[in-house]
Image (cartoon, rainbow, N blue to C red; front, side, top):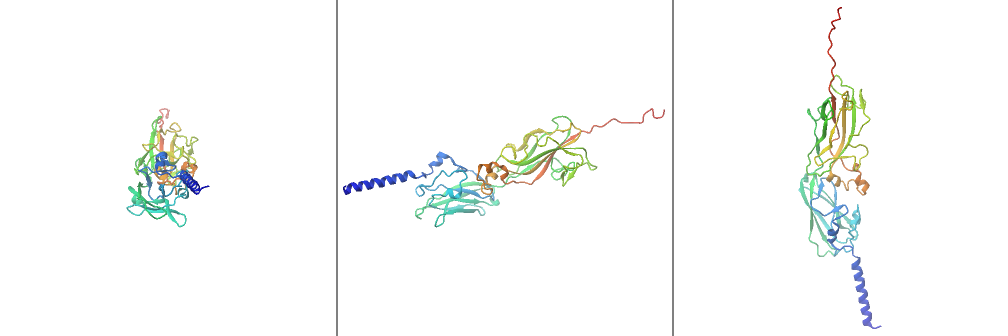
Length: 358
């Protein structure tokens, strides 16, 4: 075979290998964002929010020219190592802050290089501000660094709500009970129709709020000499004299109990932040006894605060994500009450009979 023929064959094989290698590349650039929109739990949409003091993950798409084997199909709940697989460039992460943001780059390989994944947290002092993340990529050769890319997030405070109570006010007892939402002299159905009124103080948070609340209904036979129901440690004494837990415990629509989950417990708020819908908390004994509705609030959270628990609570499966008991709870645990009071039914007036002195 002639040398010229051998040379042509060699060049052809080289071309085939180059073509095959090019076809094997999995990173074809940011056009894949256009196709996929989001990559599993992540998004590059602007306007995302993070909770102050929470460690949040971020990663940047590496250049296709210098990281051809980066595989964008990273899968759900991808680990930092998976996101950084086949990334050869180095990355410098920074975050602007009015105080001090904590940036922790993920490092892998030999020698160690900052990769395309990092975790960042902002202090509470930055709540209410927009912060900018900056990433600069440098190829493995160290030559020709990229123009820095940026991404902005809004840092917000933790969820904060207030449940309104009747005068005399929080901590001041009504019938000896603190935090009474409503008390009504019950006469007919509908007399005690109400909601659990919630005021949202952290307006940067996002609905739905989730309330970890347990619910019981009691009847009380009577009041003590001070005009109070039986009290234990500042709340209704469930074992007090004349206190009975009713069989319909927890049956009010919209109020859950038991193990926290994503559907019935915790209770989620509507856009108006009232929970549950208007319900008639009526007398359970046709007005013959006091009825006490007890709402035991363990805490609450909201959409952004739950998302910001991604790393802190090791959200690694759908099962963990959907168990809302996994997430951090905020607010002060307290019991709240709605009371239906029977109107006194007074008997007849007696006097000395005219037949007394027959």
